[in-house]
Image (tube, rainbow, N blue to C red; front, top):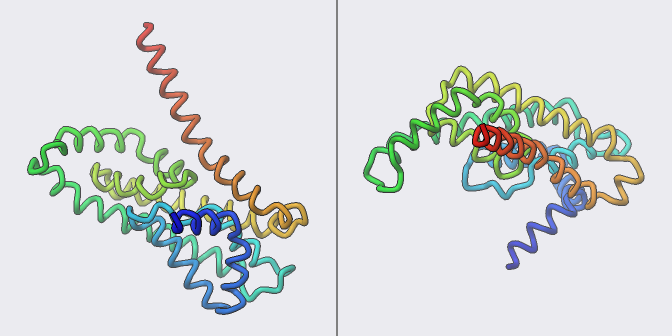
Length: 220
């Protein structure tokens, strides 16, 4: 229970926690931010780490108005690299584990499930990889499942790079330009919640579209 409370406090007051870290560690904060984004995207067991909100907060503190040692261009480059490398590692972990997990030794993990996953990612993989970047938790699982489903690495890499750069750019530069506004500073917790809700919207839209298509097919 204490862990859950700490995580909620971390998410809602990320600006205060990050401010303390920057004051204590200075430019070493780059390494911490790189590590968090890399682990959040690279390890399927850590989907609970902050992603969108952390990028936004980091971009905010890179603003010259706050006088922190962080530089927005250095921050942007390192976090883009962390996001791309994280998804790459997650993909190869899934690619390595997939054939063994679905070899038939585990009864509820059947080969046909792996084949269906592969087929899905070959048809919709690119869109899935890009959209997943903006959805908490799903962001961590998407590259792993792509690897399990044996999505071709060439296709995965293209969308991984594009999605990673797009994700980091929108949130870090969003924080850089808007994070220092008085309204945002006073209501940072609400801004974080809004970011999370907006992040979930693409997934909700896709689910609604898919259900609508399924309903139409059933009626036809």
